[in-house]
Length: 550
Image (cartoon, rainbow, N blue to C red):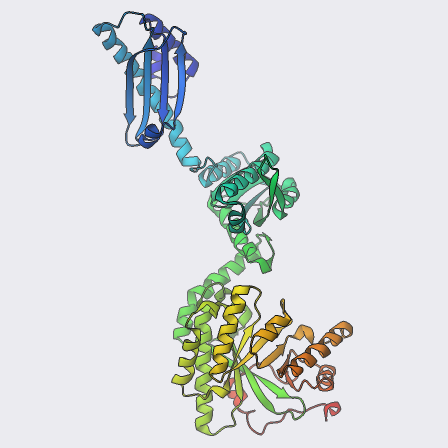
């Protein structure tokens, strides 16, 4: 017994039950019960583990309760002993001996149970799911055994789960998560492991030959949340994937998780697709994104963002009748194209700050042109959809224009179409407010998204800018030409001015003329120009036109 009580590395429950049996027989006890609670509050609520270590069936006359609280964890272990109701009570000497023996046993058992509790707290979350610590420990063990190659690590986020919670309630949502987790866990079996990172985000590692089938589950799988009524909900996920290569050098688990997290973040941007594989290119793109964010504020302070102007040309006269202001990031003698920084800034409200800066630059140029007596044309400025929920957007825009003392008739804002009812309502309010202030509004890239007739009917547009996908090219005349004709006719019938973007060929110009779409923007005439070059073409400058247009 002494050996068992002093061996702190091995806990043999059967041996201790045997010891307790001997104690109970020696003191003529009929029953011994041990209770373990992870906290004081758990003890108060009766949420713990109860073990009947000995019971000879002779009744339950309570003899004593021995209780021990372990600090600092505040875990509680308690033992209750019983004698038969008709047996003699313990003598004082017997009680003292029993007290010493039980306290010694509880001390050891509490330490053992505490080790189990610490393991549970460290490697499982409050809902009983293996957590990220459990996952990282597993990766380390795989590395120690040389088992990394041939495995794939994924991180996934359940898609639109807030809508599922709204539809079936949070309790139903919890059941869905648990059943979805169990589904994947059972499928992986001994070939993989899954943990919960938090909320509805999970990580898993498994043999790569299972990936195809795992992705089938991620793509959409019905999950039961009410077995009685056989109610199910379709669950899908955005997934970031990293397949471990043969030459992979393991340093720490965080390195792998960082890769899957990066891929998952891209997957959550649905226009990239909902399944993204991590590659070295992903790493390069991530580094580029971080550089843009790191240097953006300094670039604003150093006036590195410049307004370039792409002319809008009347195809019957060759004269510039307007321009679109496009942002370029100029660092020394290098010009960074928008595709390298605009998508990054659109992930937060930095794009709004850039839009305001561009508007200010345009207004300053127009103010200078007016002062110099140049011919003035209307300049359009793009506004990101990130502005839609700025309740004071109209006031912010008008302040910039008015502070520069620019007549409203020289400014036009280009807004992209929306796909939700909420955004539609906000867009209508903004377009109406700007129109009342005498500022022209253009629907940008019409046709590139999910354009609807309601978008054109309900919002007071002045200009429809037709995206290049609507402009027929050598490869796609047929249906595209038919659609172009009807869209232009519709816009003209509604009193909208049409501007064709992406015009590059004589045949496209001829098609514009045939359909009385008189304004073109594109490389046929000019690329976006620095302000100094653009100014040279204001006034009397005329672009040469093909004979077929004369």
